[in-house]
Structure formats: C-alpha cells, structure tokens
Length: 406
Image (cartoon, rainbow, N blue to C red):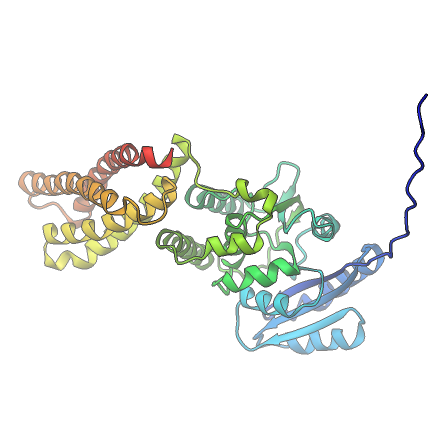
C-alpha cells in the first residue's frame, strides 16, 4: 500500500519587480535623439515587465543634444539625463553604469538599429540570475541583418581576429546592444581601460577570462546609413586594444586571478576559458602573435634602417624575439609563471638565431645578386625569409613547450 505524503505548505512569496536602466550614449545627436527616446520609452511602457529608466548619457556634445535631453527628462517620468564633459562612449557607459542603483544595466545605440523586441530576451536571463552579461549578436544564424558588404566584411574579420588572437568564444563584440547585472558591473568595469569603441570588446574578453556566463541573443538589425563612425579610425583603435590586451596578459599586468576569485561562479571554475590546446587553435594564436610581432619588426627595422640593413635587422629581430616568446608562452601554449621562463627564452633565442641566419643570408644574397634592388624589394625578400623562419619557430617552440602544456 502506497502512502501519500502531504504536500508541505507553501508560503506565498512577495512579488519582486526588477529594475533596469537602459543607457543611450550620445554625442551630437540632436537630429535623432528625441524621436529615438520617445519611441524607446513608449515601447518599454507598453511591453516591458520590469521597472525601467531610459538614461541619456551625453558625452561632451557641442550641439543642442544636451538641451534636447534635458527637455525630454523634464517631460517624461522614466527619462533621465547625465552629462559628461569628456568624449568617449566607453567612458559614458562606465560612469552611468557604476552610478546606477538598478538590478540590470543595459545600453543601445541612439539610432535603435536593433529591433527593440530583443530587449526582453536580452535582460531576462540577467534578472533570473541565469547569466552575468548578455549581448546582441548580428552574426548568429537566426539573426536578420541589413547592412552593406563592407561593414559585414569588417565585422566578421574583426571577430575572427578576436577568436584567433584572444581565444574569444562570443560571436559579436561590437553590436551596440548589451546588458549586465549591476553587481557584475561594479566588479568588472574598474578593470576596463578603454574609454571609446574598444570598451565593449575589452569588457567581454575580461568577463570571459573571469569565467562569467555570457548570454547571446540573435537580433534583427538594420544599418544606419547616416552613421558618423569613422570605420578606419575605429578599426585601428580596436587593433591597438587587442595588442594591449595581448601584452597585458603576457606580462601578467591584468589581475585575472583576482577577477576570477571575485566574479566567477564556483560551479564554473573548472570551465573558465583558457588557452585552446589543439594544434589548429595553437597555430591560429601563434599566427596572431606572429602578425603583431612581424608588424613590430618591420616598424623597428624601418626606424633603425639608417644604421644599416644588417644592424637594423639584428636589433629589430632581437627585440621582437623576446616579446614574441613571452606572448607565445602565455597565449599559444598556456604557460604562466616564471618556471622554465629562462629555458623558454633561451630556446626562443635559438629560433631567433635561425631567423637571423635566414634573413641575413637573404639580405646578403640580394645585395650580391641584385645590388640596385630598391628598399621595397628588400622588404619583400625579408617577408618571405621571415615566413620560413616563423614556421620553424612555431615547430621548435611547440616541441619545447609541449610537455608543460599537456
């Protein structure tokens, strides 16, 4: 005979309404600001299940943007305005997010390129505690995106660079549609150095390295043809930011251990993203470090060329060889700490010697067989010689470090 146990009495729990601050960072947006804010406020009032505020973050606008924002805030209950005297989207987001008392902080671009229906799926996993950060992705298979082939190519290329160089697993770093829990923001934002367009990427890379859960939402997105973003300047700034992170991780100046201890979930501690172990992944990361090293080599070579081709080649190779070994040791093969560091640098210098022999020999052959060759012919010969030397360097470093990283 089965005994039916009585159900325990369930006490009604008080309904808790979460609060969300949606930030719109703006700089000289007098044309679009009012229409976008009114559209967003109306949408949230009619469909959003949480308490909300729309916060206009004006960062040093020189037109009438601030006056329009103040007028909107005075007439609409859920609209606020914050003014900063210095430019920078990242600076504005950091300032407003850290000052917020909401449970969740989010932001979107003023042009509202992202379909607002994605806002609730973006915020809900943060309210429930399922995720720590949420991002819109234009590169998901189920996303619907309308934009030109140039921007599409740049976006996909940039995210490929992030995957190869920093091991990022998120799909779209620069979509202007993100949210995070305020408690996470308080711990993570002080570690983010960039104040401009690289802010998003740096935030996500640090979050992923800290073991935080990043939730991705496919979005419908329509490109704003009137965007004033300088693509070339932004891309250059982003690449400098990638190099800064690579350098910071290599020398240990970014306190990842502390970040993990403060932010990562205990149950996810063993799954914190690390250095990919497969041969292909290692080659991709080695290639990314190599691209940066090669660029540094040629800049140094051209700067030092007045000292003579051989002297410039020697100095440029030696400087970049030490930096290259340190970067590959940390990122390509996942080795940190000082143990065996000297051994690895010595092994890197052996590879440097081989590279020096190849490049110096190539220069000698060129000067002997074609004395009138121009400077760019000289550079192209060095590119080929460095490519061969790079392959030899990867194989030798992998053989030397394989025991430690396995």
